[in-house]
Amino acid sequence: MTSVDFAAAQKRVADRRQARIEARNARHQAQSSGRALKTSEHFPYPLNGWIGSGIRTWDLIKGRDGTQPAFRVGQVDAELLDEELLELLRGQAGEALKYFGTHLQDDWTSEIVLFLRVILFKLSVWDHNASYGAALQNLRYSDARHRGPLPKQPSTWQKTWYGLLSIGGRYGWEKWEIWLADREGSYETVGTKVVLGEFANLKQPTPRIRLLSRLSSLASSAHSVAAFVSFLVFLVNGRYRTLLDRLLRLRLISPSNHLSRQVSFEYLNRQLVWHAFTEFLLFLLPLVGITRWRRWLSKAWRKAKILVKPESEEQETKHKGELGFLPERT
Image 1 (tube, rainbow, N blue to C red):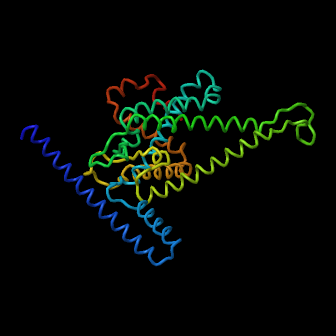
Image 2 (cartoon, helix red, strand yellow):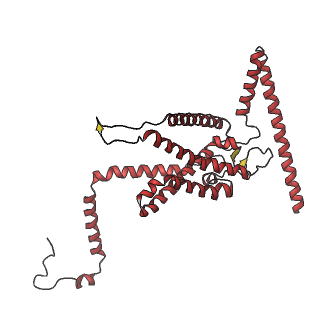
C-alpha cells in the first residue's frame, strides 16, 4: 500500500468515526429533549420551563457521549504527583541554599517556589502539553472546544493563560494575603510600656484594611465553593479536573484509546510492605537488645576467622618463650 492509499484510508476511518460520534450525539440530544418535554408537560406554565431547563442542564452535566472521559483516578494522581515533585525540588533547593545562610530560604520561599513552578511549566506543559505527573499517567492536555474525532493540542493563548493564572495568580494571591496579614495583625508599637502583658498605645488597622481583608476572605470562600462544585461535576463526567481547566476549556485525555484503564497498585503494595517491615523492626530491636547481638556477632566472626586461617600462619603467629603457653587475655 502506497502512502497516498494509506492516507486516504486514514481519512475514511476518521470520517466514519466522526459520523458515528455526530449520530450518537444527535440521538442523545433528541432523547434528552424528549425526556425534558415529557416531564415538564405535567407542570403549569411558570414551572415547566424551569424544570425542562434543569433536566437539560443535568443531562449536559452527566452526559458522556462523545466526550471520552479519561479515568478520574489518573487525573487526580497526576495533580498529586506534580505537588510531590514540587515539594521534592523545594527541599533540594532549601538544602542547597542553606550554605549561603538560613535566612534565604525563610525570606525568599515564595520566590523560590515561583521559580521552580516556572521551570516545571516551561519544560512540561509549554513544551510537551502535559505536566510530569500527567505524563506518568500517560495523559495530555487537549483543547476541549475541538469536536473532531482526533484530539487537538491546546492553543498558545490557552497555555499562556494557564501559566499566568496557575503560577502568577497563586504567587500574587499569596503575596496579597501576606501584605494584608502584616497590615492587619502586626500592630506597630508606639510605646514600650507593658500593662498586664499587653503593649500600650497600639496602632489599630485602618477601616480600609479591614474592608480589604473582608473582601479577600469572601473571595477565597467563593473560590473554594466554586472549586468544590467543579470537582463534584468532575466526579460525575470526568471532563475538567480543576476550575482553571474548566474556564480555559483544557482537558486531560489519553493519546491512545487502546490503553488499559486498570489502576496498578504494585508500587503502593510494595511501599506498604516495606513500611510495615521497618515499623516491625523498630518495635522489635529495642526489645531484643542491640549490644547483646553485637557481642554475639563479634564472637562468631572471631571464631570464623580462626577456622578459616591457615595452619601455617597460625604456627607463625604462636608466641614463643617460657610463657608462650599462657593465653593473651583472661
